[in-house]
Length: 83
Image (cartoon, rainbow, N blue to C red; front, top):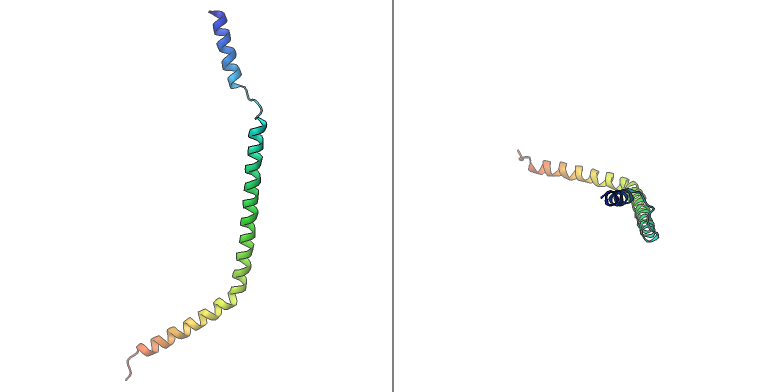
């Protein structure tokens, strides 16, 4: 009985020990890390591209906003009843 209890204790102790991960698992983690790094780089490039485009479009947006205000003023003038 004592020998059986000791064997069970060793099994439980061994199961709770932290063992280094296998080379296969480590390689998989490295691939995932590399893929995440590439995704991060792609997102960073996209953000820079969009920022550059939005900065280039600001003058165009102001021009369109001015035209919109002019058209709204014309519409408001046309809606006023002629007296």
